[in-house]
Amino acid sequence: MSQLNKLRFKLPARELKGFVNPYVAGTFLGFVLFGAFALTHGGLGASGAISRLQVATVDLFFPAHVDQVGYFAAVAGGAKSALDHSSVMLFLGTIAGGMFSAWLNGRLKFEIYKGPRITNRQRLVFAVLGGAIMGYGARFARGCTSGQALSGGAVLSAGSWAFMFSVFIGGYLFAYFVRKLWT
Amino acid sequence: MLPLDVTTEYGKLVGYLVFFLVGAGFGASLEIAGFGDSRRLAAQFYFKNMTVLKTMFTGIIVACLLIFLSSAMGFLDFAQIAVNQTYLWSGIAGGLIMGVGFVIGGYCPGTSIISAASFKGDGIAFFGGTLIGAGLFGESVSYFYDFWNSSFTDRLLLSDWLGWSVGATVLGVTVMALFMFYGAEKTEEYFRIKGTESKMTWSIANRKYLVSAAVLLAAASLTWGIGQPSPEKKWQTMGARYEKLLSSRDVFIHPLEYVKTWNDSSVKLETLDLRPKDEFSKFHLNGAKNVQLSDLVETSFVSSLAALPAQGVVVIVAANEAMATQAWQWLKVQGVVNLYILDGGLESWLQLFSDKGSPTSETHQGHDSFDLTRPGIKILDQFPKDYFKSKIKLKTSKRSGGLCS
Image 1 (tube, each protein chain N blue to C red):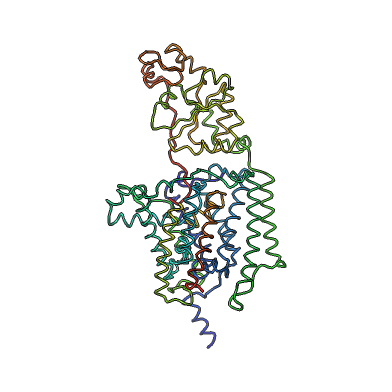
Image 2 (cartoon, one colour):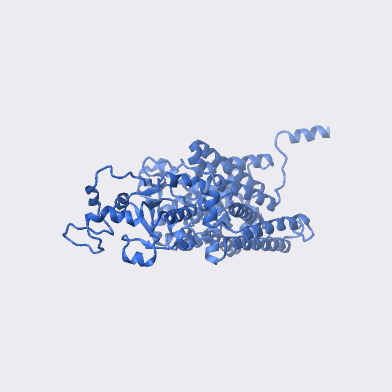
């Protein structure tokens, strides 16, 4: 009986596994990053695809507007498609890899992660707000944590290191004011 | 020889497939580290869980060592690796903004993709937010366009900034990371609420950590010890792929092609004159820079050439072909893209134009004589149409700073 229960429990969803040791995960990440440089001469990134996705969305509804704003036109002016770019392929791969790994480790299910003192709705509002600030900053800095800090850091780009430390500084300075969200 | 450029070498389809697979590895490595969980990421800023710092810096150090050790050993041509351009102040400003967004929203763009891919509601919401933010930036950038484009250096390495060798910088960064890891473990131990999380993982008695740290240090020391290859050494190990350009004389341009290029306003022409100073001061082409072979190994000088826009063309003028060839080899392996040699140097130049005008650098307005240091496009009319073979082919695909655009 107990054996049967165990079997039934295991079959439909995969067992929840713990996270990998951060240094081991980092080493894996480092090899992937090196692979990216060795095969494509460039590093990893996420915000480039996000920007292209955003421009493509605007282009779908207001194509004239995209052609007007120089910053948008650079990626999708006229007949150019914003999504026909290697960064978008990398983005799709990232989704696939993340999803597969989440499934493999039993983490592929709907839930909302939040601090203990706020409601789900509050969490979602702050997630959108934080995302918008992050998306704005990532364009401002010409790259996000992956494209600038990680990739630029590995090839010793001076600007990327300055950027990396300012992300941490910004986060630590502001953390006190939003501690209710997380602690 | 690395890096491969899969898209140009094997076509778009294979290229896109490789990008997809690299992305999958990236996504998986973030997921197994727990970066799909905003609580884990935000805890970084309350000193309770330093996973972000540990994983990120391990990734950076491992990739950095692999890159620069391969480069030192001659497997990888670092000049062909895209280095993020430095826009110092807009990078710092953007970084501070992102730090605030990070602690409010609990993710960064990359990690929100992972979170959304594993169906987390807050990750999906955050990802939606990044689209809004990116849009707002595009709408507002015109108001501070000058600031956004200020303090720019195309390829500024930490080592250039510090004035250290690349190897020493790699070692320095590795040592710094190891101190940070130790600090991160101590911090976690100090700030962690008792009983809610597992005990700290760093222990001086843990052999695995000590051995790993020793391996990293050894790799970094080796990188420093071997040193990054000089242009001469790089030519010996990597020159084969460029040798054909020299032997076929495809990079030796005819004086008339130089004239044509000089008069083409869409091309940014940079002429390097390698002759001795006194000869240079007697006569030189308009706009030419007098340089010595030793200048061609100075990173600051070479990076200014490598940083030329896609329409930039560099032409070498030298007293003899041996010297011109050597300069070409050294610059080529350092990543200068559209690089040519003036065939026959100034001797051919003067011979060709000797009966067309007087060798003076003064422009005589209204006369038929022309300026030998900068002939106008009209001089081409004095030669038959197929007098020379055009060789300059602009390679306009500019290596940008990776995938952030």
